[in-house]
Length: 63
Image (cartoon, rainbow, N blue to C red; front, side, top):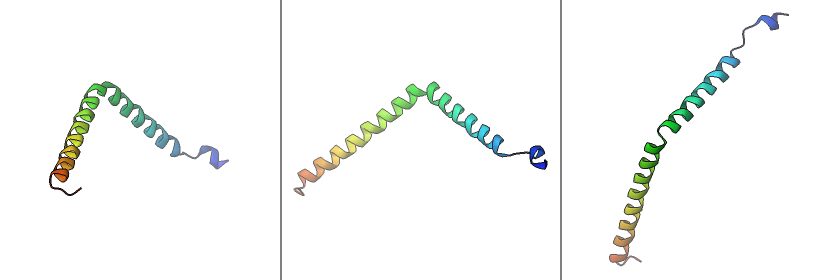
């Protein structure tokens, strides 16, 4: 009978996680264009770095 009246902490933990997920998704939706721009900028910089490294390697005759 005491089990029925005990407070369970598991429910509050689940609710906290769900609220955090909803907030994170909301922020992603609100800032999706900014996130897209940042990801494109990072992708361009990585591609430029790889191309630069490849050209440097080819020009030095390391291939």
